[in-house]
Image (cartoon, rainbow, N blue to C red):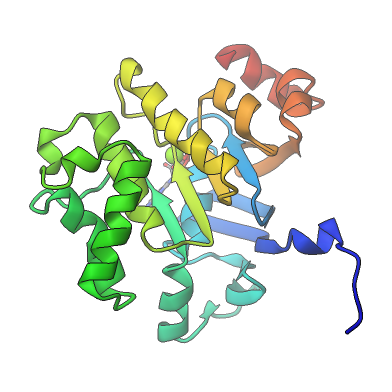
Length: 264
Ligand code: ADP
Ligand code: MG
């Protein structure tokens, strides 16, 4: 057997590659050709003003939006693309569903099923989509609840939990699918200020553990501390990206400077 030296670049393979993503709603061009690469274990934080296209970008990455141009590759597999004047092309339904199941999504508004207990919320997709045996899915769910500090709430209903607790359940639910990548869309924006910290702590813990994450956030402290890369979006364009200390503390672009002056 030939021994190969470990190549750190090769080891950090590309999980997600989006190229030239375009999206319009009627006359409103919301994404004007955005490129994005996420490496395994990377935490990418996306910042930018309201209406700049951050949510639309996340939704496009997860195929919740049909893009008008560009391509999205996950784990080296093309999941969707569109060339100008051509139809939107995706993987066949089953393969697309399989790829989408490998991308977790956590929304601002938690989106738990209100009529299901915490445990039922978490096991639903692993059992229904991944066809895991209920016992196995339950054991995984309980371990995840412990991870987010809510093992005592397994039988509670979402309405019995605080917003911060609900969001921690939503994170556990995303992780139960063993995703390659988790997309977070302003996960703390709907929370009362005193509940933000507990959710950010869980996310920091996941980042330390090597979870690959794309996080749209207004929490500049979190971005500064946890992100490997910060991307600043404005007007449907990826204006500036780099290490957090560069983008947040020494931005090069005037638009980034203006935005940071308002939020920091
Ligand atoms: P952000 O998340 O950065 O605040 P969004 O991606 O939500 O920005 O929105 C970008 C722009 O796209 C906004 O002008 C918004 O009104 C518009 N938009 C988003 N979703 C839709 C939709 N489903 N239909 C029409 N316009 C939309
Ligand atoms: Mg948004």
